[in-house]
Length: 448
Image (cartoon, rainbow, N blue to C red; front, side, top):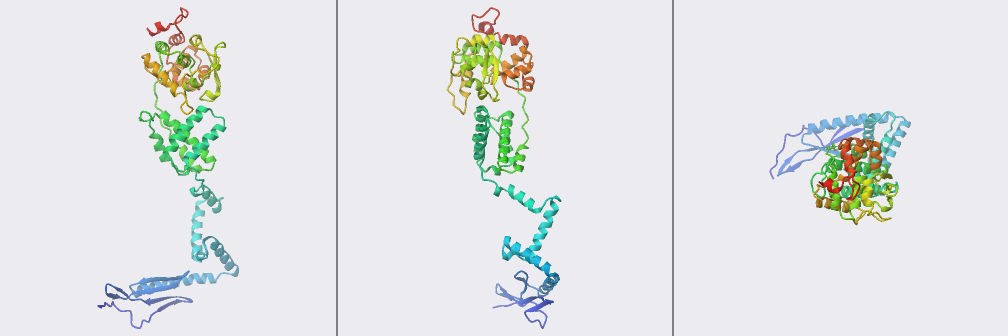
């Protein structure tokens, strides 16, 4: 076998070479190595520091220099330890014993203790003066994902809706929460609640689409979803399902900028045409929406018991109102005339079968079909918008109209004021069935 011998070490070298500094020593061994049939001299430096250590060198002088450095630094450390008093030695031994309880005997070394002291110094420098490292560790552990209950978004959403139900929220509000959180949001995020993040949730909300048309949802819809998600996050924070930092992160998602859209209302002629085209079962619902301003969902839950024609008032019970607040709405002369032939002692005003999840949808579809038969362009929430606009124009009392329609004066003032003139308002509330007094606008003349 062909061999190659590098420049030999100085004559007289005997292996192992011992390097000493007091009681501390390191040894260099000659450890020839063969690579691809060629033999090379290599040298292995060995010393003890929390166990036996080894390092291989191709140059003997380099191995010697490293050995001298190691024994020198190790010797300084041993001298420092030997200079400790008996009490200081006991304290050091106690510290190592405590370290062994946490990390095990193999890790309970002076070197490890030195590393811990460095970490402590860095952590302590980052803490307020009055805080302790133990307090910081407990707070961190409390908020760490591994120590947070493994609740999914669906589980937390279900708990939140149940909590709101026990707090007495209206069925309308609970229905909205179930649709937005339990169905839409929980389906989109089939993950742990604690794994949510602000950017991901924001991307989802900003990308919402109308489930029927697949077009981008309105910013009002996005804002409503964001409000529900933030409420869910605050509930999860109170229940210790997520950290306060995550709840704050979700609450700081910017609210989509509201897009101003014109309020659509019907003319007196258009409402007269719709009432003329309505069947006898649907006509009361149209008249109540147009001349009392109830929401479609509120009309869909209305019982004839609450239509008190003799008293000229209509009662919207708290459980049927979107705002969960009972309100009393006056019944005007024209509405009384429309309802008189149809009024009953009890039973639903809504002629449609509605299920609990989508109450109001079936009635809304009926009203839209009536508008098509009357050749009137269907306006979403147009009956309610029309009532508020014409009522403000004639009554000229925004707070009173707000009480009647279950809205805030600020919304009434900003959205509905000046949409109609007083003359148009009087014409709206003068629309009555055929055969009424001569000073009342008949349906035939209103359509014309």
